[in-house]
Figure 1: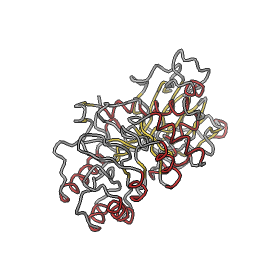
Figure 2 (figure 1 turned 135 degrees about the vertical axis):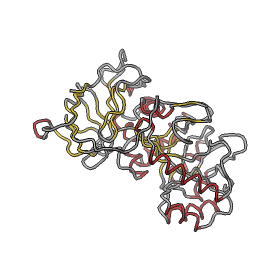
Figure 3 (figure 1 turned 60 degrees about the vertical axis):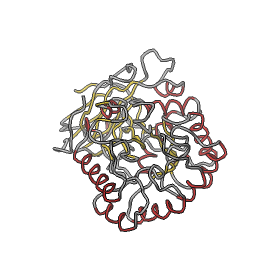
Figure 4 (figure 1 turned 180 degrees about the horizontal axis):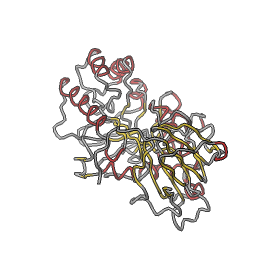
Length: 396
């Protein structure tokens, strides 16, 4: 069950040793030649071989027991409300379940499921600030939920965005979920948001719920939001030609989600690779949604894109870690000194046909999560949601 967790006392010194495979999250060097990681007060301090690392004075030592250590997974597209409850599915503790899927950070694409969500400008700004403040002070089971993403409505002016930014809002909800749907109007507001450091995402594809609208490639290109949200549809995708054109004509992040069209997701991946733009690809779940809550959605996307997209598994993990961290301006997602000490311990699922963790993912199997660490502290141990890992780390 999710419990309240907020940034608290410093974590002290964490030493992780006997790492069998160290995934960096960096496309340019996805696997590191190292077996030990040290973090101090929630930030990575050293990465290397045990003989070269000062492990003395550890407050916590974790023996990875030959398993894989990867950056904590990042879900680039969620729709939280307040706390660890979603009214869309009337489900409690959904964020805690994502933690058990290896997710340590979530990025809101709008708190649109709030019953009676205000659509007037005063109300939508108040909701955004409230959501930002609430999740800043409350981490369900330790998960970092970056929330407070207002949905654009007619009548907003530049001063509204300046006011939101001054209050700490850094995200826009999906452009197209409110009354602002035309490319020209959206582009003007996206520009104001960008001026004040607020990152934007645009809905792409067919309507997600009754009453919403189709957003095609022309609107996406004209609006020029920072993230092409669920380029594979949420749920209904654009035609293949439009997906490829978006990848080719835009320089913005290409977001592929679990709650979209899987074939369209593979098309977007292929297009990005052909353009040598894999660094733009990021992953999300677009949940909670009508199809439910997907605690293993990010792991499933990694396995899907690796197995059916013929993407080496070590690179597929980068899409959900380092790529997303860079595109979303986050301090986690990469295993390198100075970054947040957010980790997931993984091993191949018991009885998978894969000989190694990476082999099993390339075959389409989901790995088992043995432990998750956030800010240098253990957030959960063996996952209750993934298939059982062959080996799990131990606290020594």
